[in-house]
Image 1 (cartoon, helix red, strand yellow):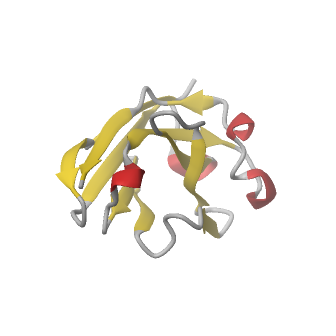
Image 2 (image 1 turned 90 degrees about the horizontal axis):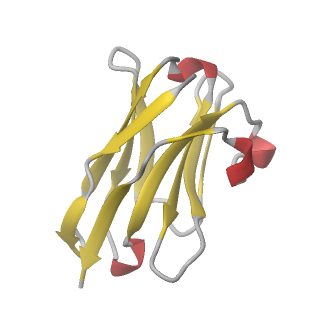
Length: 125
């Protein structure tokens, strides 16, 4: 069973950058699609970004496109979410998840059976 641990969250100011990490054990990212989701105060959990490098696709939510980048380090079995030009509206608990999902369902939470515990990102204005 895959276990995921996120880290890297914190309190930053608007316009700052932050890099989140998602470390995996019990499996390698190459065998799965990796998704990032977030749950902001008073909002529903929403899709942020996903990639399945072996399948050759990456996708982002419109709200983060051009500001966030998902990447991976195979040697460390870690996936990153680089977040630039952060806005107060990006404040949320960020979760990574893995699953064998095609691009067509990459934005669907139910497509990912394995989830981390989340890391808090707070962006002040």
